[in-house]
Image (tube, rainbow, N blue to C red):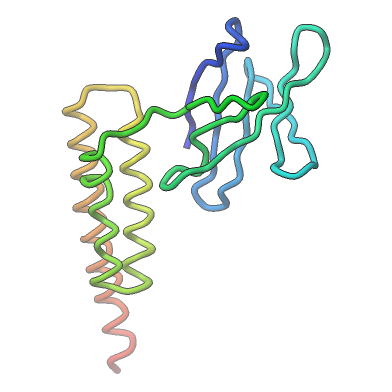
Length: 157
């Protein structure tokens, strides 16, 4: 997932953070340059300043996002738009597969929910976002039915 944002400390720079859904590893990009991470605790990103110094930006995760806040000089900066409560409810509907289908359903549901939360943060009209989210919800449940059907066929012989 890729998110574009601005930091008030660097008004002339554009930032984007890219986080792998599979590994959870993040990359911070400033003006199309990938920033390094320090080896210290918290693995902060090193943002270069105009006077050839570095500012440490500590990534902070909060469920369900892998990184939604950067802590710079003790100040927590929200880099991802917070979703409304109803967007979490609607986007999280695939998680209910956990109760229906155990680990397989939970895995498919978690992927579907993460995809939905990402869709809600994309640019575009609300109608297109909700149509995409509904498609992901339906797709998640259909995928579960197909996978569950395959498991039943494989193990019922």
